[in-house]
Amino acid sequence: MNNLVDYVPLLHKLWSGVKNNLKYLAMPIMYLAIIVSVVPSPKTVVNIADDKRLSSYNTVILDKNAKIDYILNKYDLSKSEFSILCGIVLSEADDTYEDAYAVINTIYNRTHSKNWVRSVDNKFGKGKGMNLYYQAISPNQFTVYASGTYKRHMNEVDSAGYEAIIDFLYTENIMHNYLSFRSHSIKVNGSESFSKKGNNYFNTITEENRI
Image 1 (cartoon, helix red, strand yellow):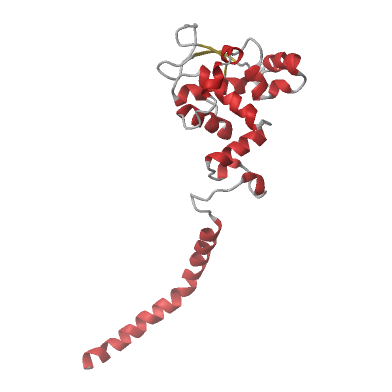
Image 2: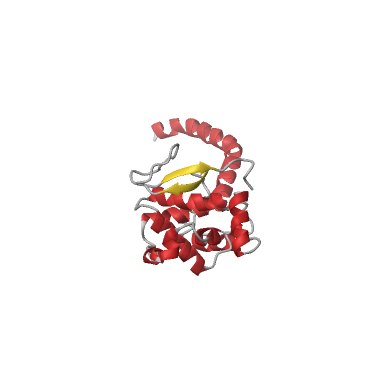
């Protein structure tokens, strides 16, 4: 008992020190609580169209269907047009993620080229040249559309190439600035490929030609 009594002054001193520092701990704890309540879980799925607080679609994580809904709205595409666009891209690309990404990037670049936009506008009407779908189905551009072979690839929604299309259109992370490509077997001086058997990309968009 005497030994315990000897510790009482020490315990009292320790408690006084903790009590005096509580005021310094209160503010950090409050800030931590606020952060935890505001930051969403990494697995949270947010429909961007319904969340007006978001300034950028890159701030949230969406599942595939939500990304597609965003893409349809952003690029003014119907589900049918998006399906045809994907079929064309997958037909023109090899079996890799990288080449499919490069093909859709090429079509996207055309929607930002004055010359390509003017050409498609003349064929389909004013404003159509800035639409991915009309660039993809424009006459004399992609033989897979004219021949109908693109239809074989329209339902490959689990392929790496399909993921590449969604990733590019959702993020718009540009891989290249080329406007044209030829198949792997056709060599073009100064061209670049992005996969072992992928297309050869060339004809860079100039700043003067960029919309």
